[in-house]
Structures are given as structure tokens and as C-alpha cells.
Length: 96
Image (cartoon, rainbow, N blue to C red; front, side, top):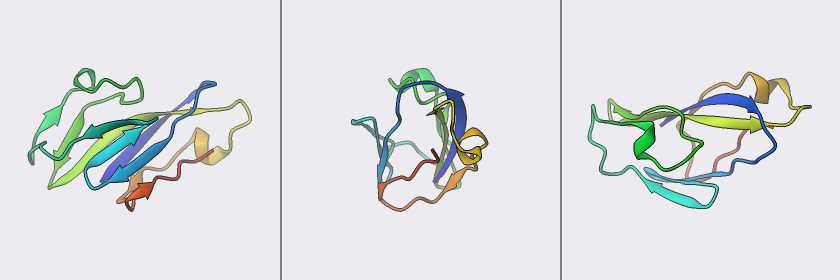
């Protein structure tokens, strides 16, 4: 799994949990298990304001971009985040 992050100065929060190909974004579960290899799900098909691009399965791995809200005094890691590669199941740590 590759999670790209697009930082934006906002006052809301993002929480993310992973269980296989199922993501829980701010308490809402999104199951991408049935997305076939080479398949693309447009962002508007995912009812989340935090999914800001398509969800793709490339070589068996999910790839997508999430909006990453951050505070005015956010760290450099939050303002210029690196992609999250192959996160373990459980809560996904996001830069702050």
C-alpha cells in the first residue's frame, strides 16, 4: 500500500486505521478488497472529503492520496510529508 499525503492548513483532524485493504478514515470504513489489479476507483466514488484522487491497484498494491490537514504551527514533516509505504495493520501514524 502506498498512501500519498497532500497537506493543507485546516483545523479539522484526520485519523486513519488499516486492516488489510480496508481503511477507516475518521471512523468510516472503506473496503477496497474487491478493487482488481489495474483497477481504478475515482475519488468521487469514495464518499470521503479526505480521498482527493483516484484509488488505484497497481501490481497488487493500493495507491491513493489523502488530504492531510495540519495546524498553523505544524512540523516540516506535516507540511512536506513523505508517502507512507506498506503501513502495518492498526492505526496509521500521520505526521503532525
